[in-house]
Length: 489
Image (cartoon, rainbow, N blue to C red; front, top):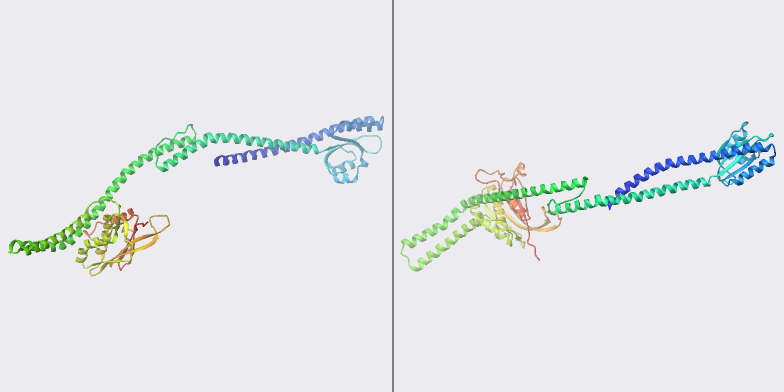
C-alpha cells in the first residue's frame, strides 16, 4: 500500500526525530546526574573516612589504616585507600593536572575528577585531605571504575531503542487499521467509480459512510455524475440539431451545384429534344413506309434514353442521402460521372477537363459514392469557376504512402491521392486560413454559397480522409484529397 508506506515513513521520521531530541536531552541529564551522584557519594564516604582516620590516628596509626582496609573490603564498587601525597607517582600527576594542583596546595581542598589509572582505564578519583600528626600530607583516595557507568549508558540506549520500536509497531498497527478502514476502502470505491465514469456509467450510486473529506468527495462525484448526465442529454440533442443543420447545409450546397449543372446541360438536353421533335414531325406529316417509321422510332428511343440518363444522373446527385459506406467503390468511375455532368459547364466557359491516372494505381475505396461524388463536384466546380477561358482543370489520381493527418498511430499507410489543379489567379494569402470556413466565398453573387470546400472537408474527414491546398499564386491552386484504400486480405 503506497499511501500507508508514505504516511508511515513520515510518521516514523517524526517519531524518531522527537525521540532522538528527547532522548538526547534526557540522556545528558541522566548522565550528568549519575556523575554527580558518583561524586557526592565518593565525597561523603571520603569525608567520613577522613574524620575517622584523623580520630583513630592519634590512638594508633595501624588501627587507622586497618579501618580504611576494612571499608575498602566492605564496598565492592569503590577502591578506598589512605595515601601519602608525596608517594603519588609522577606519571599520574602529569596525566591529571588537577591532582598536581591538589598536592601543591598549602591548604588542599576536596577534589574529584575523572582520570586514568596505571592500566589506562577511566576512573573517578576523589581525594579528601586527612589531618594527621607530622609534616607529611595524607589523604583518603577513593577511585571508582566507570565500567558500570558504561553499563548504565547502555541500559539507557537499550531503553530508548525498545521504546522507539514499540512506538513504531503500535503506531504502524494503528495507522494501518485507520488507513484500511477510513482511507483505503473509500478510495477503492472512488477509484472504481472514476473508472466507471470513464466508461460512460454516470449513475450517481456512490455510497461512503462517515463525515470526512472522502465522504464530501463522494457527494461531489455523485453531483458531478448527475450534472454530466444532464449535460450529456443536452449535448446529444444539440448534436442531433447540429447534424441536421449540417445535412441541410450539405444539401443546400448540392442543390446550388445542381442548379448550375442544370443550366449547363440545358443545351445538351436541347439537342436530343430537337432530334426527337423533328423525327416525330416526320412521322406525323410525311408519308413514310414501315422501315422509315421504325428507323425514326429507334432514333427517338436513343435520344430519349440519352435524355433520361442525363436527368437520372442529375437527380441521383441532388437526392438527399445519409452517409452509408457499404461497399468498395471505384473512384475513377465517380470522377468520370462528375466529368460527364460538368463538361457542359466547362465547355461553355471554354475550359477543358483532363483526367490523368498513374498506371496500375489502386482506385478502390470503401466510401459512400454519392458523398465523395459531391466532394469531387464541389472542388472541380471551384476550379472551373476560378480558371480563365481557354485553360484547363487537371485531375490526377495516384497512390502515396504517408502517415495519416487525422490519426496519431504514427504508422505509414497507403492512400489514394486525388489532385485537382486549376490555372486561375490562386488564393490570396489573407484568405488561405478562411477557405474551409462555412459561407466564406470570394465569388460573385449567384456563383456559390461558400459551403463547397467546408462540406468537402467534412465529408472527407467522415471517410477518414482529409484535404490540403497548395497555393501556387498567380499560377492557380491545387487541392489534394486523400482517401484510405480498400484493404486487401
